[in-house]
Amino acid sequence: MPTTNNTNTTPPKIKWLDTVSSFLDNQFKIPGTETRFGLDFIIGLVPGVGDIASLGISSILVLTMVRYGASGRVILQMLWNIFLDTTVGAIPILGDIFDLYFKSNRRNFELLKQHYGDGAYQGNGMWIVILVLIFLVLMFIAVIYLVAKLVAFSWANFAALVS
Image (cartoon, rainbow, N blue to C red):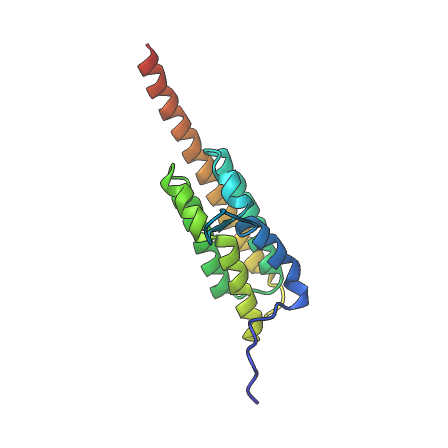
């Protein structure tokens, strides 16, 4: 018997993830435009530190989505969204513009919602949680390393300019 896919409604179990991802990506509107942004964009404006904080928040959301039964394929798509958001978002100015429109948290929530709507919910797979956690920790370390290198480079160039 075929099932009806109704991805327009959010299952009650994941409704709070809808609220959080909207707050992070769509809470506010630029007056006179249709462009929306959220806390993720605002904290991303702080060079380095904002990107690390944004990665941390997005990682927590993805880990929660994993616990709610997202499949390996969906998780890979979510991790790709976070990777793009973090790497491109770290580029000064261009990254901020990218963050304004990419909205990785909303994309990831929509992936989970569609996953539920397709009836592909699998329950919680501990091995996937562990693999995702390892990937996110490695990505977090890489971002911290790159930010430290960028700060050192900027400081050296600033010191050379001043002297």
